[in-house]
Structures are given as C-alpha cells and as structure tokens.
Length: 238
Image 1: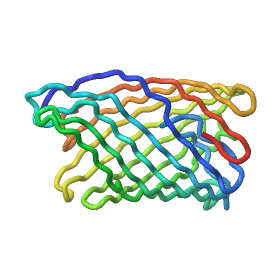
Image 2: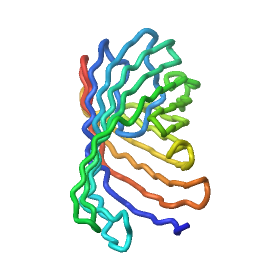
Image 3: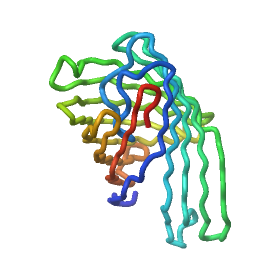
C-alpha cells in the first residue's frame, strides 16, 4: 500500500441552487457542512445541487490510469420532508458527468451516468435554540447498481448573534464491483459564516478527507479550504 499523501486545495464556489415549496425555516450556509436544524413538521422542499470539480491532473505516465484535465460534475435532485419537528427525511436522484484526457492513449473521454438513489435521514438530538451546541444524527444509504454506500454523520453547530458555525464528523463505507471491494472514508468538515444584512452570509469552510481501502492503511488524505457565500429570500436560497 502506498504511503499517505497530503494535498491542499481550494474549494471553488459551489453552484448550489434550491427552491422551496414552502417557506424555509433555515437555509444552508455551507457547501458541505450540515447545520443541526431539521425541517418543521409537514414542510416539503425541493433542492437542486450541482457540484463541479475540475483541474486535477495525474501526469505520471508510467501509471495506466494517468489522467489530465480531469473534471467531474455531480448533479443531485432532492425532495425533503419534515416528518416531525425532529426527524427529516429526503430522497435523492444522483447523476455524474466525467471528462478527462488519458495520458497513455492521448484520448479524450467523456462519460455521463446515473449515480444511484440516496435516502437521507436526520434526527435532531439537541435543539440549538435550547442548547449551547446543537446536535443531529445523520444516516444515508445510497444504491447504485453494483455499488452501495452508507454514510453516517454527527452534526454539531449553532448560531451566536450574526455568526453561524457547524462541525460535521462523517464516516462512509462504499462497497463496489458487486460488493467485492470495500473502502472506508473519514471526513471532518467545519464552517464559520457571518450574516451580512438579512439575505447574505459570507464565511469560510474546511474539509479533510482520508480514504482507507479495505480498511487498511490510508491511501490518501486531502484538505480543502475555501470561501462560502449564501443568499436567501422567502422563496429560495443558494
């Protein structure tokens, strides 16, 4: 197993748009980090997520999978419903568009695929309106043909005056190739933002990702840090 490598990158602005069927109790302030608040009972929302990752290159030509100009677009369409004031559930349809240039064959590759169905579940344990720190439990299975993924989170956060903060501790297990291979991933993300007026927030977010193929030695670790901007009104947020 190769030794762990550490890289630092800048999180680009994430194109995240969401429109709500009813008024929002609390919009999302961060690209990756969830806040502990759940939807009120009976509230229904539709959210459309588009995340673009580009610019990665692996130019080591002695590797069969060497790639240049790598770009991935992840698209998720979500319906979210507040079952109770503490329990929120959501269903996603996921798609991926990937493009890159293979170094060894000098071929340009572009692929679009259905990336499965996800079922998100969030349960509010400590209400941030009543406690110094809010906490929510999160579990999300994803089914995509011969791939299955299970994601679990501990979500912490609160609002102090005009400041909003969130910390997420995430563990993912992914079974691929007809469940013959397993990879675990540990993720720590954190965000801090400040409200600017009634509609805008500006902040910073960091995300550390470490992968463990077959739950053995870590194959890679990457740290992402970058700005976050949020806009919201009575009908939508983004």
